[in-house]
Amino acid sequence: MLAKGANLKLLMVEETTWGTKPTITAGDSVRIPFDTESLGASQERQQNPHLKGDRNPARGVLGRVDAGGDISCKLNGLDHGLLLKALLGSVTTTGTGPYTHTFKIGSSLPSFTIEKGFADIGQYFVLTGFKCASARFALNPDGFFDLSTTWMGKGEDASSPAASSMDSAPTERTDAVFSMTDANMVIQEGGANIATLTGLEFSYENGLDGNVYTLANQGQRGALPAGAVRITGELTALFEDVSLYNKAKNSTETSIAITLQRGDGSGSAGNEKLQLFLDEILFGKAIPKAEGPAGVLLKLPFEAYYEDAAEASAFRAVLLNSIAAY
Image 1: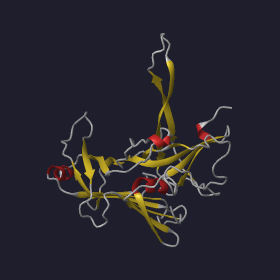
Image 2: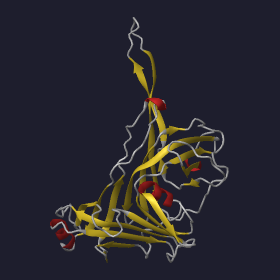
Image 3: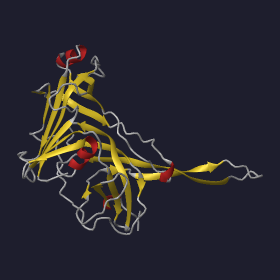
Image 4: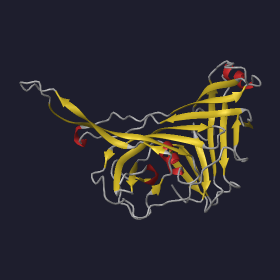
């Protein structure tokens, strides 16, 4: 039987020790809805340069492990909170239901054990020590909010592939995706609603050092430390006046806030709400270009940073939903 992508389940569970699969009881792991994925742990063979007295090649050996890959999805208001925690590192939860989860840049990043379950052929691959290296957020008028995440990890667990899942009853929820065409979607620039945007995307990088390989780890990474965060993006708007251009020209600090919600946004089931904040940004200067006879667009690159904003995080997210903790 051929394994099918439609039947693949991605399960994630946070680790207590980096690179070690935790003891798992039923329901500890969470199924992550996704569009595409490329997670794995590959090892290329290293050619043996020995000369043997003839022209035949000598037998080589396996090289070091390159563990990592991507997960692409449409951002939802439930399980993807775990991706936000993986990306930023710090989450504070308040409330007694619904709950408010505030994600900020933390001093360290959590690591995860991830299972790729090909249930139709009974094969389950388990990857350990995975941290979120970067993410790309993309808003466009087409209906969905795209989130692409890139990961680095330690390697494949010794038990992998297994004939059964690491979790006999993983937590699986309805896919509560956000819609960019919902009337409750709001984007603000400088604290005011902005209606002329045609696109907004930004990338967040954790500065993971993936080159820490040690002799005692059989070709696997010995650590995966995080460096300084870097956030860059691009705003695209209808060119109707020079207000945004002047902010770029004069290096005027501004901000971006995005609000997405389902239903009334109260946080109960079916009413999830997500807010994303870049509290301090500066635009790079770019003169509008006429690329044809139709309307002209203004495209401005930007960088986000932390200097003196009250929330003390260059990027933060606030998620209201019915999940008690991440």
